Image 1: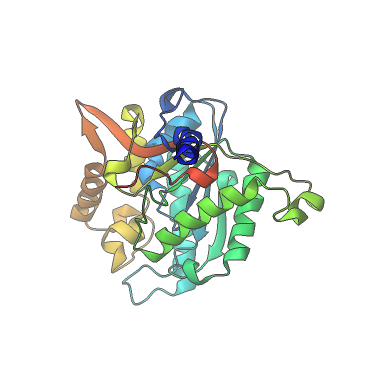
Image 2: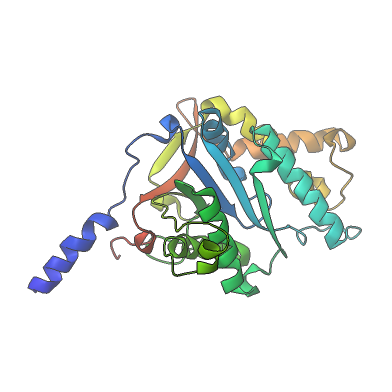
Length: 283
């Protein structure tokens, strides 16, 4: 019994759902790395990303796939769709103040990340973590207490990001990066997880002043969220029916959480070692 009590006391502080010492709205001077599966996975964080960039933080977006599968338009090839999705993501990033210099795409096929060589993918993620040295990792929530993802690429992106964060801190893992590339082991100790279960969210970020940027960024994903899904007419919304434009804007606007006249994005915030980022009370 004594051993069990001591073990609990040692582990318990890391298992608590922490709140940021400083509200996310006040962060500055940090480096933020967001890892997503597809070219639109960062959208649900666009308001927060725009705010962080505006407040003097370095923000990078790393996307695992080219998004080269998700369309119902029979006239688009995978290569064409890859180009379209890249253009859309860069346009969305520009709308929130980020440039192509802040963009990384690992080039995997949409829908196939879970079947890629995990050692290879994690090595690439570790490389960029060690190169950029982020203070904060934003990613799909890998789960608090239990697995939450059913969609293949989202599930893979969540777990690969978590595994890479864990590996990046150990100098004897992927040591070639340290010996030959001049990189250093790097520990990330703050996380903002998006997606996942609503009940697990513990941090709301006020994006009221950046909601319009989030909407404008979302409007760039024409091939995914408009009739361009079935019949892609190009990157200019004026080439689409007027009602299509109105529907797209309304759809994006409805996704923003609004309370008392303010707009918010919700996350699960965690601070601590990567090994315990999914720990919590068992239900």
